[in-house]
Every structure is written in C-alpha cells, then in structure tokens.
Image (cartoon, rainbow, N blue to C red; front, side):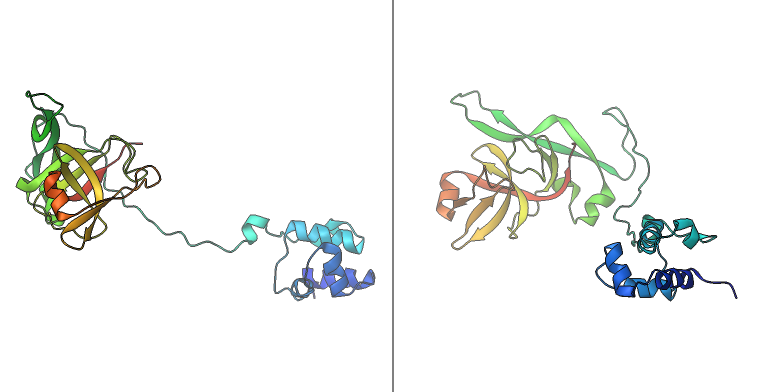
Length: 244
C-alpha cells in the first residue's frame, strides 16, 4: 500500500526522535494538534509547512513531498463568500438641452439665489430659467414625488462632506416639508439656499445638522426665531448626484 504524506511525516519524525509536541515547537507552531492533523492526513500542509517539517527532522523537503502537490498559502485559505452590492443598469446615455425628452422623462428645474436690485446683498430664491435636469417619471414615482413638485439644488461648501462634497446636486421634493428626524432637507434661510439634516425641537423649532460637524456645529432655532430669520423648509431631499 502506498505511503501517504502523513505517514511519511510521522516516519521521519520518529526517525529524528521527536514527539509531535517537539516537532510543532521546532516549526514555531503553538499546538501539536497541527502535526497530528498532518500525520493523519486530515489537514493538508502547505509547501512552507513541509519545508519547516523537513528542516526540523533533518531531511530534504523533496523526501517528504515526492509526488505530492501541496497547496499554496493562498489556496489553503478558506474561500471567502463574495456578495454583490451593485447592479449594472446599462450604459450612460449622453444628452444635452437639445436632446428631445423620452416619453418617460420630465425636466426638473434648479433653484438659485438671486440678488435683489435694491442692494444690501439681499437675495431671494427663484427657479432658474436656463438650468434643468432630466428625470425619469418612474424614478420620481418610486420616490412618491410629483414631477411638478421636484426641483434641484446645488450644494456648496464643505458642511455636508463627505456625503455631499462641494458641487453636489440634490433633488428636492417640495411636496414633503414635514420634518422627519435625521432626513436631509433644502432650506430657504433668509434668501440663502442651504441643505441640512433636520431634527424637530419642542415648540416647533428645528435643529440643523451638518455631516462635517467639526467645522459646522449644530444650529438650533425656535419657532419664533424661524419666523424672524425667515427660515422656510423647501422640501425633503430624495436624490443626490456626486462627482469625485
């Protein structure tokens, strides 16, 4: 009967006068069970392990290996289950303002800050007459957004990093202005466009929170302060686009 690799290891170990514990120690292993598993062929050694064993028992590695082809370290590692976390939707279609809308698309306008001619740096928020973004009606329906209530806002500065870097675009549902704690909203703050995560406060006030809280601490406003500072919730963010 052909001698197995485990039987060869055991034979050379005994010939060297080593116990399983002594061989394990000579190879730098903490437990003799590793040697026992190799000798009973219940565990397959790697080339590196066979080299250690051969050196410890005083023989050439080739005397242990013979026609055996042990696995490499990488092959001996248990297989890792790979789970997909993305879905391929297809290639990107390139379009411009002159490209006709598909039957299932609508244009969504941008909001912008406009400085009043009266001066003093006073601004108001209006819809842009030139900037707009295409959205699929199905995309809006899935988010329960009416096309007529959808607008886009460009995020400026670093207050919402790393989630929304400077220049990101968000889609806003103007039909959803009731604050749900922890959700993002677009805000008209005295004529300035802002995007913040909101939390309700007792008495009808709100807390504005940035993702970059180290540089932009929370802001809290009572219901009275919201009126005085002209803070109006424009709508909930339902979509975002980021370029890195």
